[in-house]
Length: 93
Image 1: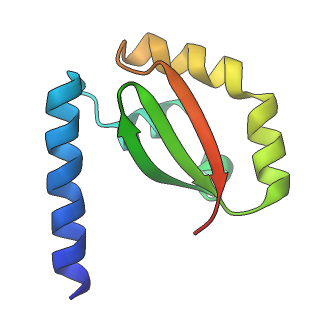
Image 2: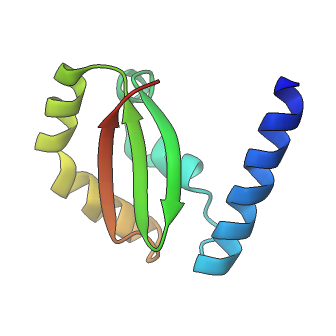
């Protein structure tokens, strides 16, 4: 059942990416270019809608740390893809 869930999520992400014009640049791949390996270990991609990149963070300390770096991360993401307008962090799995 897990494989079907992953497949559906990937299809929906691809459709959203095509609709927003970011089909060439997968948000997960953009994150790999911008974040360190240590930061990537604490972040999970949640959504990308209307230029807003939603990310889940595993703890409040990482949420605070990434909020401090939010502006610089946003600048780097905008250089890689013009479709990214904002970043939102949430705590969760």
